[in-house]
Length: 115
Image 1 (cartoon, rainbow, N blue to C red):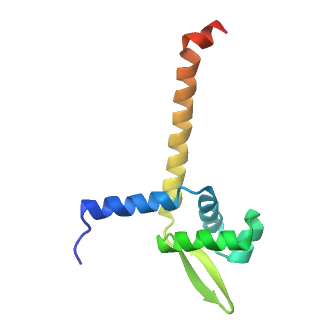
Image 2: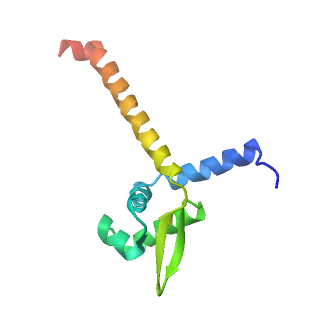
Image 3: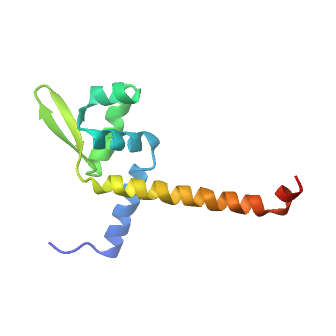
């Protein structure tokens, strides 16, 4: 199998970012990082309707961020690669830095100095 091209990687990158562009999906990933769960347990733990959780799990599964395994009549979902949590944590750290820089810029503006 050939290595993916830059264009293919860029497209996959875009699809992955789109999948992560929904807050509920990020919450689901963090919850599954704690432990694998059935969709009903995720819905109860996160406080969202089960159809909502199922819809978001479908997107995450299509991006191969989560996998599903049969457990009798139900399905258990789990994260496929824990590096996604590292990436999400890095993004949160970056966002904290961005907010801090923005606050410094706002604090140094002349309008704020007169107030």
